[in-house]
Image (cartoon, rainbow, N blue to C red):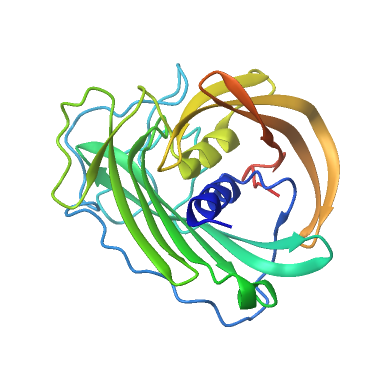
Length: 277
């Protein structure tokens, strides 16, 4: 399996759509694999200018988060919560727990003058899969607090001894200069990265919006992702417990052509946290 292929697979997993392979688990006390410590942009935790941030839906007001620090206001409709950590385990064929995935909301701050969420994901293979495919990847997303459109997407990859460091600054006009340590990525307005898309799907009110479309940039290519509500209330059982969920079908298009091998189902709990289970 090539590095590019695994990058794509990991990006899909981070999107939370790995065909039901990943389940939210309670911590099992295992020794975690090493994680990359990436530096947040200078001044990230400072409050932005008085500019009013965009909101995810019309008619919603922006309120300050509960924090002792001077943090930007956040659309109260977003279910994001600083410090939230979701841990998943992967099963492949008859092998259980062959990979782990952690999704977390690292914090909120100011990036490029906008109220921004810092989202992270960590993926690691476990034995016995790790003996043949060693993978330790980290993804960082800086996404607009109101729309979750991507401002910067980072990939810190270590796969089979190959290391890749990628920091990409999103621009829809080509006029926003990237910093010295980032590469400019030309995207469509409103483009999300996989982490921002995951959180966006949690935020959709599926009772009022049965289908959504969004451009998604995975660090290599720009795709058209379409998500549609398939069932408003299904019962599912995962190691973390029993949940009533919204069943969401996700299809991926490349240049207008549907990628048949990239069709997924996402189950989001019908609770206040809207946990992907």
